[in-house]
Length: 162
Image (tube, rainbow, N blue to C red):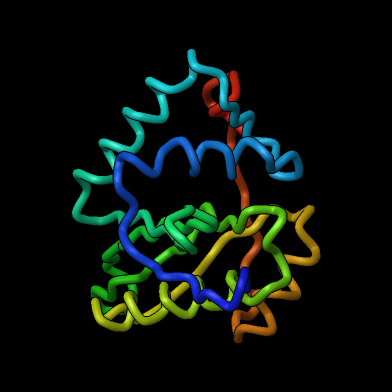
């Protein structure tokens, strides 16, 4: 880790937005079109407000020395199949690029799993871009298994459509 300091994981706060946006914007592999340009800020703010207001979403940040260095979003979905089980999906997993390979991502995922267990989920799943071969190995090391093929349909053009 950095200077022997452990990451602390907590719910994201509005003040974390600039750091979160910067983490997403540095991710060229994901191709989501994220940017630190000022004109995009209102869209990020609206998204944050929706996530914060949702009973089914939790945005997590990892913090070291007051700096946001990692994030993940948890979404809880209760379904009729599996006798009404609630599932948790882990998405938007990112660690600041200069801190990857230091165990932060593993601790972040472990924290997410604990939160899911506390909410009584029956299944924890995550999605990862097919291009992220290193991330797939990482998730498999943490005990996740490849089990389904994913599909998507772009219904709106622009940066948010990818």
